[in-house]
Length: 279
Image 1 (cartoon, rainbow, N blue to C red):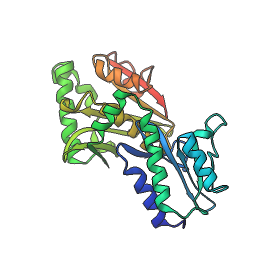
Image 2 (cartoon, rainbow, N blue to C red; image 1 turned 45 degrees about the vertical axis):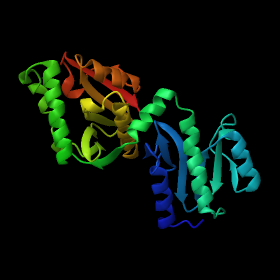
Image 3 (cartoon, rainbow, N blue to C red; image 1 turned 135 degrees about the vertical axis):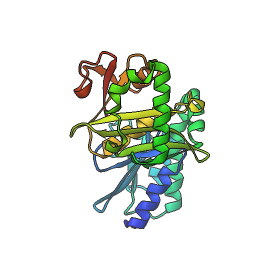
Image 4 (cartoon, rainbow, N blue to C red; image 1 turned 90 degrees about the vertical axis):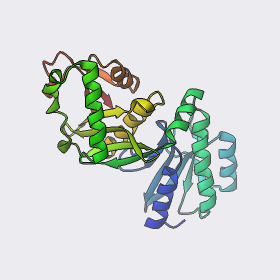
């Protein structure tokens, strides 16, 4: 299968087309990984000297493909022995059947989906109805959602003056990496991150409209923001939330965030809770 930009873009687009799928690069520039519900189903190496794809699979089907294409489809090259039966690596320089490759990508995706709990499958069905767009802090839909977030915080925390000391830390002109979720063309959720230092991205402005809560959308935003931050070279995500924001605290803890001493501008602020997560 030719290694040129059109084919590479076609493979990349096909992987991301699957419901709930998104791109991430947890191991560096390559391989490009594709996840659904936080789990990898495909890894793509488009380099000229290492043109390969590694796909999740059912062991019996994986063995069949290795028998049909000896030396071209092999056990997952990167996996420890206990995991190798569940992954196949395809040498794309020697493999020319694009339709079969796409079939194997579909099977990789389904292999991961079939292992999800019933609750997570239901969440994925809901999330699959949404469109996620990458944008920046100047986006009017992001601005509108941030306004809703501020009003919601006013209701929880109290009148606006109690939050005024935080406003200067949430200015949109310093935020350049944003994800907005849409349902039927309407913006319903958002999240962002910005530079804190060379190793740390600071998660900001995570909000889900009340009508779209309880479907795992907050967790999905965090996963996608972490994936984008990792691709930007960050090693950690940090964030600040409020002690009174019980739902937000629960969301971040479930996503793997742990409490740390208040950092930077939040030092000495008793109402703040700061957290971090290695990505």
